Image (cartoon, rainbow, N blue to C red; front, side):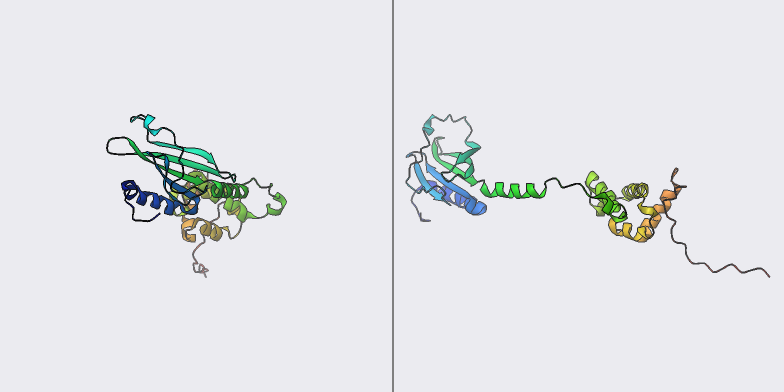
Length: 232
């Protein structure tokens, strides 16, 4: 097929067909059918061995009602080599409303099905975690609490507000994480905030009714003060 052709249908629709073929690469066959002579007018990325001039076998397009939809699909097709296709057909009409050509796009489902199977294998259920190996790992509990909150609320760490962080710290306290020595730096890193922010939030937790006497919430670090002078 040459770029210069006297057929007005090719001049009108070949750029569209070529654009679709370039976008979908080698995985899509794009066929422009001659509706008047029922033969292939042009083809891009041929899959089934057809070429221009071969029979289209589209049936009686004149029988289509002008009020009927001009786009059909996606519908399944099968190639002789067993490949499954998803196909879409569009009836292209002339100025008088008569079918002038039919544009068909046949997408090879094989690469998509292979990718879906690969992703499904990675997402397959895993074996239960051996809890004895992790019962002392407080960082695992911290990650589960923080990550669980992020997933449940659909917001990244950077968009968590003060109430969100207070809720996370409350859950960390219930999980026993805040009772661990040097947990605050790790929690600050997990929440992507400064240590001073964490200590400020913990102070708010202590002031909250029901939280003041909670031994799991560590005290904020005290600033150094000079020793009191002994009275003589």
